[in-house]
Each structure stands twice: as C-alpha cells, then as structure tokens.
Length: 475
Image (cartoon, rainbow, N blue to C red):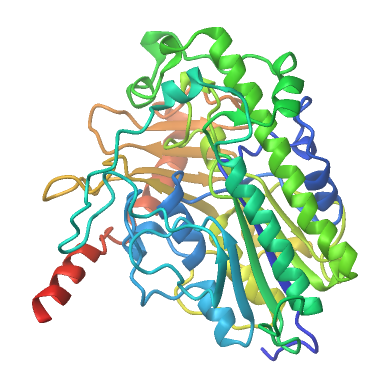
C-alpha cells in the first residue's frame, strides 16, 4: 500500500488503570470527563474494548508489539522485552515518522527506547523495585524498602498533590513542549517539519496511590457510591477471587474515600488529556492528527472486594478506547463489537498507509469503523495473566489465567486445579455473578472457546539476566 498524499500525524493518549465504565460517555453518572467525552464525540467510541493482559508491564509490551505476552517473552510484572522485538514505534520510525514518547511506558530492564527516537521525560523506574531483576554484578539488587500494600493505599486515600500527580504534571508539560517544538521550533530544530510526528503521551493516573487533588477529592467524597458488586457469599465466591478479596481489611469509610480519590484521579487525567488537545487546537492542527485514547487495563475499585487488576472480571480487563480523525473516521459513532488492544498496531498502520508487519495478532479496526462488522462479530478476544508474580525461584509458574471472549460469552480458565473454569453471559449477567460453565446448553460454546485457548503457542520467557551474565563472562 502506498503512502497517502500527506499521512496523518499520530497522537496516542495513554492512561494507567482507567476502568472503562468510569467515563461519562460510557454511562458513569457521577464522573466528570468532559475532554474524553468530547474526543469520543469527534470520533468512534469502542464500548467493549479489552486489554490482553491485566497488569502494567506485559500488558503494555503486548500493545507495543501487537502480540500476546506469551509470544514476546514478557509474562510478569518485572520482565523486560528483548531489544530485537519489533514494535509500532520501530515500524513507524522506519517509515519516516519521528517517534516521540513522553511519560510512563513502564519499560523494564536496560532497553528503554524500543523504537522511540525521543523520550524527553518519563520512566526509568525499572531498577527501584525490590524484586525487579538485578543484572550481573548489580550491588543494589533487592535493596529497595518494602512498599505499601493495596490495603495500605485504600486506608491512606486522601486529598493531596503528590502520588503520581507530580509525575503527570511533567508529562503534560513535556507533551506541550514537544508539540510546540515540532510545529513552532521553540527549542532547537530537533524535528524535521516535512516528516510526520508520532507522539505517545502516557500518564500514570488514575493508578493508585489514592491521592487526588483536593478540589476533585472533595467533590466526589459525598457523591461516589459503595462498590456495586459486593463479594458473593462464601459458598459462591470463586477461590481465585477469594484470594483477592480485601473487603474485610478496610472500613466502609476507607473504601468510599478510596473510590472518591479514584474518581477524582480520573477527572484529573481527563484534564491532562484536555490540555494536550487544547495545544493542538491552539496550533490549528487538531484535524491533522489520528488520535487514540486508551488505558493499559482497568481497576476493580472495590468490586468483588478487590482492588487493582490481575483478574478477568470486566472492571480489570475492559478499557476505554476512542479513535478520532475527522478526515477519515466518522464522528459520534459507537461500536459495540468486542475489540482488543492488539488491534491498535494494525489500525495505526492501516490509517497511515503502512503495511502491517507479519505476526500481529490483532486486526485493523478500519473496516469495523467504516461499517463492515462481519469478521468482528464472531472473532474471539484473548487475554492472559500470569499470577506467578515476579520471577521467583528457578522455575517460575508459566501457567496463566486465560480469558476467551466471543460475542457476549466469556470463558475464564485458571492454572490451579482447585479453581474451576467460569463461563459468563455478559448480556444476561453483566456483573459476572453466575458462572454457567457446567450448564449442558453451554457445553459447545465452552468447548469452542477452550479450543482457541489450547491452540495458542506455549509461553516462553525472555531472560535478560542470562543475557547480562553472558556479556559479563565475555568482558
């Protein structure tokens, strides 16, 4: 496919831990997200978009590469990605785009670029985790202090201007600088104005700690409601979720305060998105950008007694996803077919006139956006999560919790023999309280979805530690 006359600039707006339903345009009656709502009205809102791994690091690498974590070797939170892996920033840099990233990519290990030509601000938090892999001869491995638990974070919810807010102030400021520099050369002619820009702006909010700016925290404190999915009674509670249920460890007041902070952080994030879009408006280039907004995964926010992510319930795996480019994408459309973050890479290629590389798992969403939903109605969306945690011991547990979703039917399987598979009908049971995995009339769809999971390649882990040791031996 040949390059269009003038390919669009690309802007990818990324948040961390934004549960899809906490957004005005997706029906939340309390949250104020005017900028995201406006972006959705200028484009397409995907009502059922899913991440492919509900934890930051492998989930983000999965989006970056368009492949499942098992195919790229990053399974757990602390794991890096081989520098030889192909990514969309590499693909676009090769095609002449100036690829720039501001903010949190959550790259682990030594390789901190992965195809971004410029990273004016962000990251380098890969070595401050007590359990992140140390490298050959690293005298500081494992010396970081204990971090607060989620129960501590819920207990400590409050108004304030710390947490990740300070980081995000810098993200927004640097994103503005990049745009002003590209279009007006305010610093030095770093950018070549005849080459298109791919800019990813990635914020840490609304990820915990539950500390929100005072005006937002106080606004939501009397307005948020308790979690609307309480933990099921003990005899009906799934053992995997029972292990994540922290409800009894926090008071009702603490839970409401944490939810007020979370809703406040979503509004704070919305304001940051607005400031970047306002910069495009000031520069008169808003319509020249193909824009995506998405999050890396959701947040349980107290539902099922759980916080954080790391499970396959809707609040953890469903993410907000918006696409906007008024020149090519219809405005104000809503799409109810299931899509996944694996679709971002091929969709970027399609709208920018690039051939997608081989081996991508997703599909370009352009046909769906343009009204052809045939292949999407029956497509299965897959997600995987490796609960083994950090690389512990000599043989980490490589077996994942798996999700296979087709239409409104979701199968969730677990590596532990004590954890039965679950099958949910999301139309009839949107809160996912009643598994129909053992129902005879669900046997055939369950078997079909199981076959999709069984057909996946075996997971592998890329070992940066071994690579580091090998280099040490050589020197």
